[in-house]
Structure formats: C-alpha cells, structure tokens
Image 1 (cartoon, helix red, strand yellow):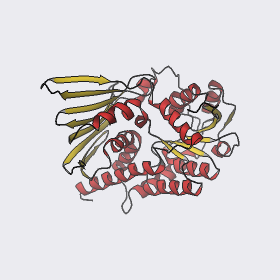
Image 2 (cartoon, one colour):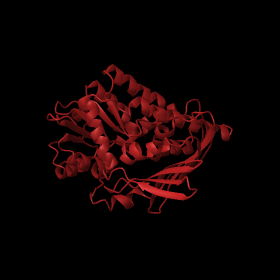
Image 3 (cartoon, helix red, strand yellow):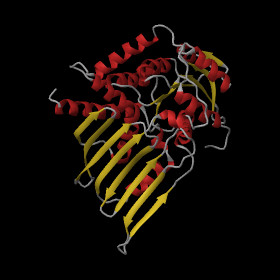
Length: 374
C-alpha cells in the first residue's frame, strides 16, 4: 500500500443472506481503513432490517436499483442468487459502478459474454469475481512455488467433499439469521431467469432435471475447485469422462506438460451430511508430491496448509508443511481488490477469466451427453 492516505471505497450490498452475514460484512468491517458499507438491499424486508441494524449500515432498501444508482456507492457487491447476477452486474456497470460479484459470474457462456461486453462499454477492468481460494497466501506463494519445481507432472487430483454449510455457519460466531418474507412474484422472476440461463447452457436440447442440478453444482462448489485447478495447471486439453450422480460429481481431464508428456487430473466433489471439509488440490511428480488443503471459510482464521512429500538425495522419504500466512483468503481477496479498484492494478479473477470456467463446464456437459448417447 502507498504511504499517502488511501481513499475509502464505499460499498453497496445487493443480497444480505448467509454469505453476506457470515463472510463479507464481517470482513469488510475489519477492513474499515479501505471500505465502508453505505447501503444494503435484499428482497426480504426483515433481512435488511436485521442486517442494517447489526452492521450499522445507514441506508437499506428492497429495491436493488436504489443501491446501484446511489451516489454514495463506489462498488456494488452482488451477493444475490446466481439467476440475478447478469442483470444486476450490467445495471451496476451502466451506472458507472465497479462490481464485486460472487462466483459463479453467471450460469451460461452467453450471459457471461453479455457481462463482459457491458464491462468493455463501461471502460473495462470493473468486474472482480470472488474466487477467494485463489487469493489464499499458501496457494499464491507456497503451493505455486513448490509445484513449479516439479519437472514433469505425472498426475493431479482435485477433491472437494464437504458436509452441510449449516454445521459450520452455526459454529462461526456470526449468528446469521434467515427470514422468509419474500414478496409475491419474486420466485417467478427467479425461475424465468433460470430457465433462460439453462436454455443457454444446454442449447439445442431440453435440459433434464439432472442437467440443471449439474449446472447448479458446478456453479456453486465446483467453480471453486475448477478455477483453482485452472490457475495452477492451466486449461485442460480435453475432458476424458464425467459422472453426475447427485450429490456427487467426478471428471477426468486430459493435460499435457510443457514438454509434451500427457497426464490426467481427476476431479471428485460432493456434499453429504457428514460434518467435515475435505478440499484439496494435489500434484504428483516423480520425486515430489505437493498438496494444498483448504478448510471451511465460514470459520475465520483456520489455516490453509501446503504439504510437501518428497524423496531427498539420500533416498529418504521427507515430509514438511508450509503455512504462508494465517491471514484468511477473504481478507486477502478484498485487499487485492482494493489495489485493483483504487490503484489500478490488474484484476486476476476478471470476468474474462471467469468465463473460462463456463467454457470448461460446457465441455463437461457435452461429455456427459456424449456418454449417454444424447
């Protein structure tokens, strides 16, 4: 950060549900030298009454356009349901605002491209997508550094098998509350938007209920893992196979080393009722294995550790753990976003970058359809 005083960026929140109450509002409050929340919106009046009072937010409304067009807002945080990401993001860009949008950026490639077009029309570099795992210091420092020392990757595995969020939220100390006073017609608008996005994600054929669940899963938990995989290993050459057996999903991706030798990456993910958080990315070389293990982000301060197992020059098995920082990924993410929006630094998790996830999802959908003869 520069020595001169930093301008405080004013934040307007659209969507005051669990992720806002448990993650973003507490983290923004701890970054009060960089951000201040000036307005909040939610479809539920009881939710905004509660959240505005708890976090001392001066302006509250159930109309998102009032937050988006408010002069006292520099950045719009889009924390609403995926179905509304595109329309809210484009409205914010057209209003001259910068945008933080929780992943997934949207659920279809055409939708994401419309966001990118709106961003370019607004002058570019105004959309920051929330892939917090990619900002964890143990990933950006230790993991990427250790993986870079593997001459030839033999295999890699992305794993994310977790229990219900409610278990972790209940022990987060944030006392998040859910209300259900939704206005008439709000569900119909959400369904209409979802139908449009699903039609774009599965063009030329009627999407099955299984397709819809697959799309929603990849947009939620899957986007964390596959975005992290892309940054660490690049975009795969192809998708060799997938399985979609709700609530678990798997895939095999074909990759090539820089020297041309092939290797495979397996992806396995799912949600069950066992209260654990088993999320990791592991890369295997001939004499070295590097793994990063993520813990639930809902409990602040849990370490993200890199483990290195290798064969040393004395033919001995060695193992070590590296913790680059105790600072949590969400905090680092917001600090990085500040340098992008206040100081003009490039955005790593941009809209264009996020579109690559949708392109990978598309390859997975097509592989599933091929396997099933559709």
